[in-house]
Length: 66
Image 1 (cartoon, rainbow, N blue to C red):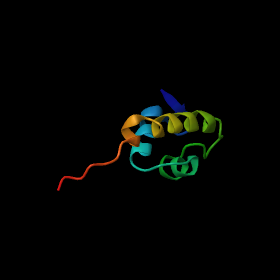
Image 2: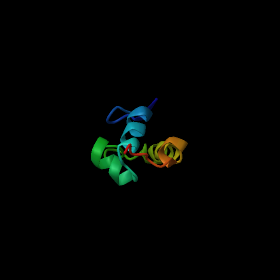
Image 3: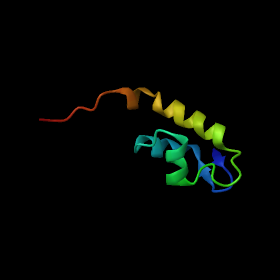
């Protein structure tokens, strides 16, 4: 689903960005351009980001093979 119509950014792109280390709206803005035009997508982008950051996959500790 499109979140930022001005830049054509989807929820999947936001999730991928969060998985790559984005933690704030500012991070998303810098990496994807979210909420840098009209700003109407800021709250929806934050919701997707928050949901992604709370997912069990990002909460699990990373295991490094010895």
